[in-house]
Length: 177
Image (cartoon, rainbow, N blue to C red; front, side, top):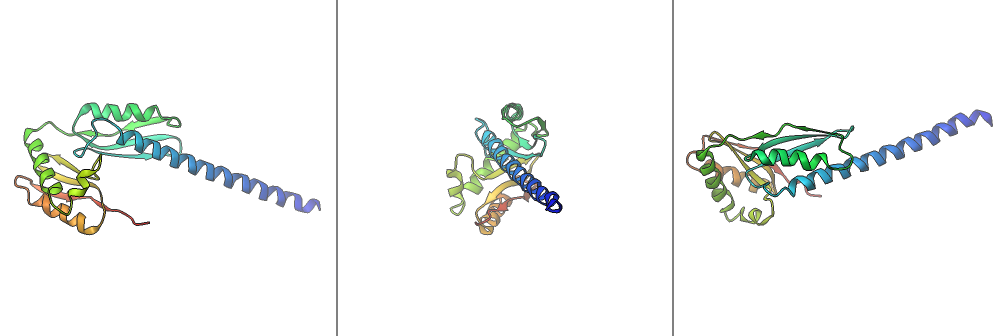
């Protein structure tokens, strides 16, 4: 009977470890949702900004992306560092250069993309899922489209805007569950 004790103890420890891993994964998922919520709720976060983040096992949050306002970069870091479970914040957000030409292109791209009948439903969201990033006349589309047709129409509309040197389409297609 004593031969089986170590095996029973092993099963018990394995079950405890699996429970701890599941709890840890739930904690990570909670932390990721909370970081996303705080970033989306930033008052000046909009369609011309792109915030991306990752949460590491040790509680470190890495912020990336591009913003049009320096205050948005610091605000993103400040709201994330106050979340319970965040041990450290690495802020690699790029502040886009000030440029009246880029500002004009942003608005022209917005009108071209969200003015299209197939895409105007995206503009109804609090923070539209298609983000328009303009740096020195070069446009990048970031975010999520509902389907590949919308993704392609957004790219075609952006490429039709006069004054845009290039368009990079990084839109992901929403996964159906």
